[in-house]
Image (cartoon, rainbow, N blue to C red):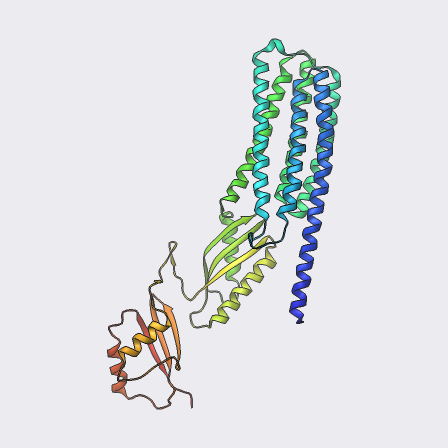
Length: 395
């Protein structure tokens, strides 16, 4: 087994171990949050009913929605970290994005129901009851607990670069903020402003809806392959140009795949280099990009011998003939003057919407001037033919 095979297997093994570790971390933090959400949900609903605080009951429903989304997060993070397969050659990270959309939509739905009920209670002010002091204690407990779980979850989400875990952390932060609003509403209602408790529930609902919208919108943009910001594209373009052998880079396209980025780009190199050298330059660009920007997961490059991109349209015609047709056309044009076939070494260069031809002759006897003139005249009617060069063996 070659050394590079061993290195590749070791890198693949390390990558899989990291993925498994990330998945375990994501599940651990989410399970902890789920248990806390269930406990807080029960306490808020029970003491909200007993203490006559609708804002606390609404906040309890918010905590239960947190627990449900925690279950969603556990399921999706497990699936999104699977290795690429035949059906998903780019990986499963988009399932995490889809999960974030569902999570945001659920937040908006919960917020809408909470806001509607609270507005009805505000309109029917005679139904408003004054909360009692146990509601204040539970609201304070919720503030402390949710802020702690937010900090822990956000730390893990940043560590493993998971937008879904970070989104779930902000979900916990909204619960902490909503509990602050609930605390103010309960305290205000107990001080004689009875409407403050129901008003606090409306504010909580609006806060939840705002977070849900932000999460869903960002993820929807990712699902429809929205490009990375223009300033980042410009930075990548300048970085690529620093690679030796690169004359220019154009048609740089980007899209997100979960927390990662996928790039498609056209690299312009010298027109005289070989196919293998151009490919090697492209591999070098890919390596440099992944080393400098670890969040770039995949790079697909196209090697161009000229700048064929004008306002997003490629000027090189796809109707230009390929090798077999080029040789057949020249052979027919030169019939009776000179004979060429596949045994000759022939290089074709597709430049300026024409085909330039280099033919390496197998004889060291130079053709007479009148023959060269005749060859040129016989190819004048070939509109796609550019430069024509004949090479003799080097003595």
